[in-house]
Image 1: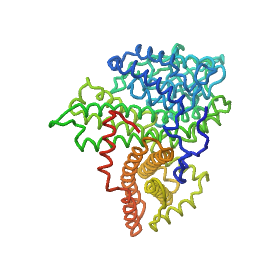
Image 2 (image 1 turned 135 degrees about the vertical axis):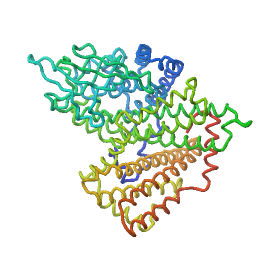
Image 3 (image 1 turned 120 degrees about the vertical axis):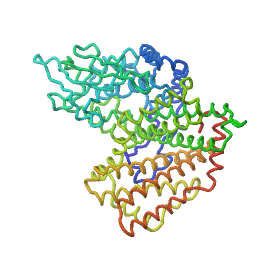
Image 4 (image 1 turned 90 degrees about the vertical axis):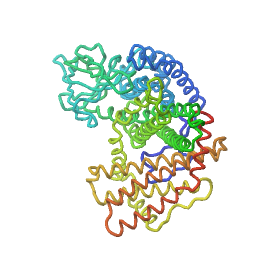
Length: 590
């Protein structure tokens, strides 16, 4: 099943406007999508939420049992082809399951790690023998998987790994030596995707089983949160790995390691958005029940402002996640049975930029929602009896793993500049148009629904193009080393993608007479308003540091005036109306 009938290049949104027809939205989900979402929600509500104490007690036998139940329900095999015991569903289904299970704390981390970066390397890069041997067991939960990349001296710089692999004299086994740290699921995994350098130089992937001679597991790390997910070191001392367990070609491990992480980031965005919705629900339940000064906390306008902004954050994140899911499925959907690893890697990498945004936006939205939800709980939020306390601690890791948010921010403009260098985008023409638009106070004139929001998105895009082009002119090939500039460019790109995704989704809702179109419209206005403020901050920094003299002052003033058009006078009333809908439902709706 491929519900997406278009092909969008990765990063194209940065230079070209999109139409509603090119984006997948939550409203486009099929009955099959809704059914698997329902199955996942029932599982997490029945098996995980009532057992928070078991997760906090680090009961990994309990976690393994629950993963086996998830396997029986098909929740471990959604991304494994049917002929290997899975369901062979699309990448949209993968995101949907991740979102539905995202509120399970440490269990959700264990589950997502298993189904994504611990299984997909075999799914996409394994031999037929490897797939037949491992995938049915990984799909059922008989085997749990782990992914071993990080080392004491190789974190964000994963390719600097020191773990080695040397062929034995008989030519039957590789002997692996090295230590991997912070490995999720380590204590109860059966398979480990391990990266090592053959003869100390060729970065290569291996499938290592827990009972292989020479492999041992270190002590459990004492973590702040996600306690239901085991985190240990994996130690290999002349670990004997059969030659048939080498995954992919010698020296091509980077094609697996880095590209599978793109799907991990995409999936993490969905999982964190699911957790954010759960935290939001906890806040709504508490504020509508708890009274102060003779009134429910929810009745105070300051509460309503928080609730509306939280809802808008979830709406924009949800919109960009489903949009990206459509793009990823369009690029990768036909590669389940491919025997061309380079083509698979290229397809996985096509939307690396958007996947990085998913990871950043999802994790930062969750942190913001968890923090504000705890704040709305008052002192109760600091007490372990209340679920928000655990959710707050569990949320923090998401900005670190699957590549820190800082690393992912650098990837966004870095990927864009690489595409320019390869001639994938007509940079000169695009830059000239954007500069002309800004210098002459010209921006896209739109008629019809959401005209002002579409104008705002066009302006955001022009600002990104001009800022990126100016940065490239000033710094040339050294731009990759100007991390302050790169980070701010990323912030504009993220705000552009977020706001455009929300606006396009809302346009589709209006055109289809969606019963929640009015609510979606209010949410989209708040999204764009918040994006304008974020872009104001980032663009002011960029133009202040990239330009000089009168031109610097002129363009900064011009940008400020242009962006001020998208701060509307009715924001208080609009946000109160959004909050009242959410409070009445006691959960996020859109």
